[in-house]
Each structure stands twice: as C-alpha cells, then as structure tokens.
Length: 245
Image 1 (tube, one colour):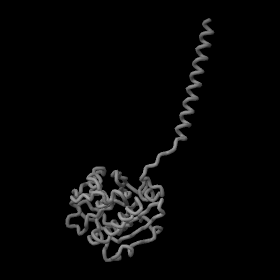
Image 2 (cartoon, helix red, strand yellow; image 1 turned 60 degrees about the vertical axis):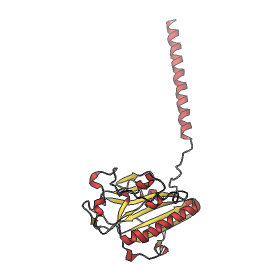
Image 3 (cartoon, helix red, strand yellow; image 1 turned 180 degrees about the vertical axis):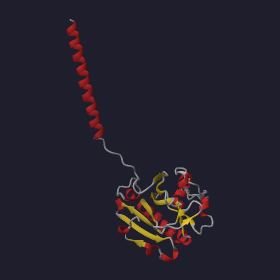
Image 4 (cartoon, one colour; image 1 turned 90 degrees about the vertical axis):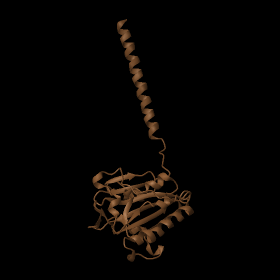
C-alpha cells in the first residue's frame, strides 16, 4: 500500500509539471505573436535615428516634446528632433517667454549656462523653436533648456533661420504634421564662447518630412548671415547631401 501511494503521488506530480510546462509554452507563444504598438510620433523613416543614437550622441535628452543629441566636447547639441502638429502650432501662442535655464539632466562639467552667452556676440538660438511649442506652458518651457540652444549669428537667428522655422509650421498645418530634424555642423576646431567654452557651429541643416504624404524638404544655413541667401528657397538643398562631420 505504501508503494502504491508513492507511485500515485509521483504520477500526480509529473502530471502537474507537464500541464504547467504546456501552459507556459502557450503563453510565451501568444505574447510573441502579439501585434507591436507604434507611437503616433515614431520616426518610421529612420531619419531621426540616423542622427540621434547612442553612437553619435554622448547623451540623448528626452524633453518629452523633442529629443536632443548632446555632445560633451562641444557642450552643445549636435541635433534635435521633433514633430510639428498642425492643429497645435498656432493654437495658443503664449506671449510671455520663460527664462533660459541649464539642463538638469546633464552633468555639471558639460553644461552650458546663460552667462556663457553674455557679451559673446551670438544669440541664444533655439533648435526646437519656442514659436512651435508655445501652445502650452510646459512645452514652451522645455525649449528654453540651454541644451536646446546653440550660439547663432544674430541675423541668421532672427531673420534667415526664422523663415525656415515659419515655413515648417506652415507645412505642418497643410499636411497635418511634419517631422523635423535639425542637424548642427561643427568645424574641427570650433570657436568657443563663455566661461564654459561652448562651441560655435559652422552651420545647421533643417530636415522636414512627412513620409505618408511623400514630403521631404531640406535647408542649410551657414552660421554667418553674409554666406546665406536672403530668400527661403535660396537656402534649400538636396536632402541626400546631408551628412554629419
């Protein structure tokens, strides 16, 4: 009788292990076959990933509304990517502008500070523009992180580059949304400004696209007003030529 009880117990235990194993296998298979979710603003074309990745960036800063590829040597952004929603870009237009602030996500030795721009001869130039994100206080304030700012020639910032930013917003309204990647090009030995030695770029590209609408358009501006055309389309370039240094 004792042996029969042992045998029955072993049979029950083996049965439980068998069914448990089958159940786990089925669950794994079901999970694997589940459809993958995709974020609405995901970059399906891979353009953003080409410039904002762990190989190209010392640090990737996610500001919720845009992403920054930050370089510790330059103490500035190499690229910034964001999506312009056509129904948001002109929704509110908050007039009062926030103050610039050092980016808390960056280690202190690699940060830029507002004082670095004082008497530097350069504007605090937005990469993700404030005018594109002034539909809420939170989105607007995000653009005033100094990680999103680069030294820009005054005329380029206030006139030439601004025309390209305005053009991007107009296209977003027409197409529903436009994805933008701004790519900053630095020379081998860039000029530095401020106590923290912020690098001054050679120029910058603006890549605009909407894959679903078969739209792509690119512009390039030297960080020197005299080297650019005075009209928007005079600075348009073939998107295929855009490379990082």
